[in-house]
Length: 426
Figure (spheres, rainbow, N blue to C red):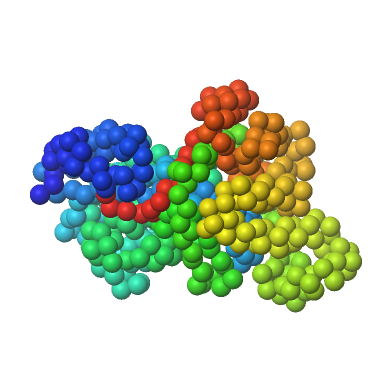
């Protein structure tokens, strides 16, 4: 039996190195996990008992790589699981209760004999736990109680999907504790989305959960959002000579809800004027032929955003094909084109109502000065504030990090890699 004492001993003597390497890739990253998981085992002892049989789990955050604001109009995206993850140590119980103590937060206790939606849990993590358990039940899988401690390195509010990582982590625990790992990653992602939509109260798409659950680079085609077409793209990111940087510009999203909503509304307005509900259903040639009428009916910005949608969809295909060929230079070219399209046509780099507040624009400009002709950079996620993404040649990484952090503060540049697996038992 693996209790926490045995677990710590086996981690420190290297018994788990092969399993860690499958998830964390490099020897350096493997060694860094020793303290993380041993410290979490200490948490388990203090919250529950050192005598329990325990198991270890991990689920990554994600980054959006291609297809900016395309998913909500049933378009295509390219995403990737990253090396920042949420981890858990868990033990089954026979009480029909799930207890999760996340580091820095109070204990969540969920009685899973009642899987109805609890309105008072809306927007809080117990809703995610209850929703994931219900999702497993809906699919006919086994469910049961467990006690867990978790810790997350996925940056909250960074656009790296800390909530999706948590949902997938809960699903991964249920999968291995009660279903012998039989639930595939795509199903776990759909269950996680269900929990966030129906229980947590957030109408998110499926991209975040899918990238966290599947890992690696992943192409997703949302033409039929109820059955998205998933393609895992095998590319050895560790060998391409670049690092993935996410820059937190420290901009606030607090008064930008209307700006985000307007993108989807305007794209759908274009579709409706052409007799469709979303842009994916629109014939691009018909759109181009109707440009004069559309400009007067929905306005120029809506037309430009539709142009961005059509072209970013094509770029996702080109990015995927470039990675499959191992042509990272062609991949970076498309990342740059996507970023330019977001800036000029989708117009989600700064808010017109705040012309003097443009942190994302500044981050992109600084990135271009350092990386021109060598790397790639683009707005990350929803835009307007928050983060940018850059693919930085490793020989420029020190300079890039130093110059970016001179503008946005120490610790604002996160150096990441693409993780080859999604939710996993260690």
